[in-house]
Amino acid sequence: MDFFLQVLVTGLVVGSIYALVALGFVLIYKASDVINFAQGQLLLIGAYVSLTLATTYKVPFFLAVLCTLAASVVVGLAIERFILRPFIGEPVISVIMATIGLSSFLGGLIQVIWGTETRTFPQVFPTAPVHLGPVAVSQVYLWSLGLSLFLLLVFSVFFKYSSTGIVMRATADDQNAALSMGISVKKVFGITWAIAAVVAAIGGILLGNINGVNSSLAQIGLKVLPVAILGGLDSIPGAVLGGFIIGLLENVAGGYLDPLVGGG
Image (cartoon, rainbow, N blue to C red; front, side):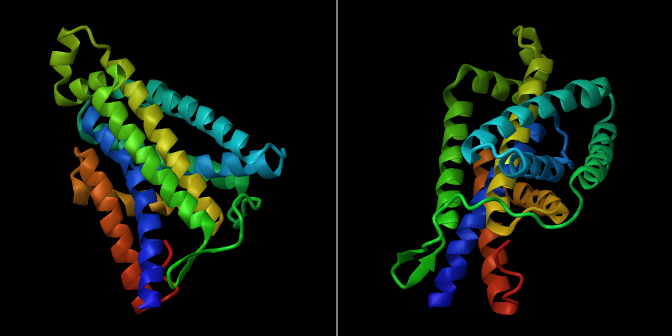
């Protein structure tokens, strides 16, 4: 029973991060009907940038995270402006192929800059585990779960009540109607990609603190795609629910079938 509770907690933590990263898939799909196959590389860039700032340049961890999020906004805006905007009006498959090409390019660039060996973040969270009944849980897991849930709540409130969120929802529902109301669809696309890059970076930082950072972390992007599909590619609540379902199934099944598979 204790082992089941242990893998259950791990599944909740990993599932919450999956849900956060899947949010980027959903936002881009809702806004432009495009699946972003480069989401995993955006996740990996965020992890490596924050790791480099914290270890090489000795920037305090939380300041490194803020700098990474700012850099992610720039990367997301640049991708939308210089790579995807020229495809406006082209068939959707052309844009999807562009994201696949972007994924390959970023993956190669990441390996050239940072290599493939696993790197670890400096110790940020206390090492002493927290005992939840019979289960001992690492504090990095609890922090990751709490932060993921908090950010999912923040983004939900943002999309539902903020003026920018309402504009984004209107654009996702009907681009032509949004244009007729004076909404800049190009601006909305830019904001969407910026947010997608930010949530990917946060997911990369959280996973990097749990398992370390290497090039295989980008595979999380493809692993999260079924999460978005399970929950519905145009549904934010569905992405959240799908993330938890996939995370729980992966870790519970992996824990019993092969303990080396569990833990994301």
